[in-house]
Length: 338
Image (cartoon, rainbow, N blue to C red; front, top):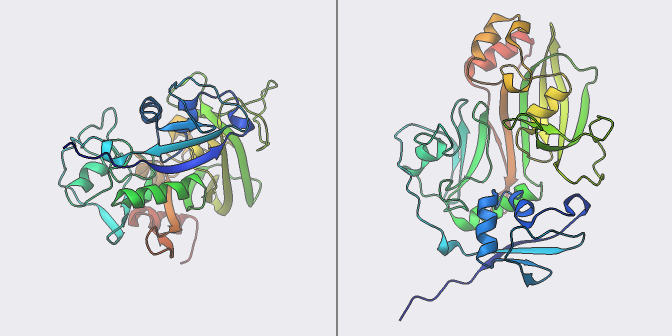
């Protein structure tokens, strides 16, 4: 007798809003952290695991209309085993229990395998030591959210698939708390600000992202605007200290788009130290100590991370201080007392 197929589990149902009118179904699904890519979205669509208005849709190119009701189901038993080879290198663990890991990622380390980083990533360093969720992409076990390679700080890792789904939904629904800190060139004229835009691929540089602009060249800031491309991105900024043409900022994410903080600060003429992709110029950097530490990293750190524990239901908040040499320099330069 053949083995019985495990039932599908619905992970989310959403209504299509104005910002997604006309979007392809695979593009729409890929924007959710619990799916993560158009490749994964296409696989789900091809397998008949996606419905629109309660009808199975099997074409990735299906165009959505306002009010369409999209549901996704996953069969976690169908996913392939990973071929990743463990790497025997330490990872700084902030917290661990049977359900989650909270780790501190160093700058310079990619979160999961990617072009040019196929043999060493955070995933490679975790798989030999911990049991992780299978996740929704075979080379990303346990990975719920990400940090750029040159960024340091906190990540939560899922140890089983139920935990993964529940954490991913918190990031989707914007209930997870993420606070970053950054050192930037330039000093804002305000002490606090909320930056709103729609992010999409840069029109000429595919390595970059940028805010969508209107026909008159101005960045679209109205969060209710009907934008055919781009994803809504919202960053809350607080100025902590400033000195000699540099600023130290708190950045709270309301959304978590690719390169969101880097784009928003760059477009305000506040490029992050070391972030040459988004406007940092070494020749404008006068402090040699910061300049030396910014080699191979950008001065962006995921400082605090909060979420509801997927098993206990308790609110969790974790703090990860800057690496010691950077913390000492920031406190000394900006005259910050602990």
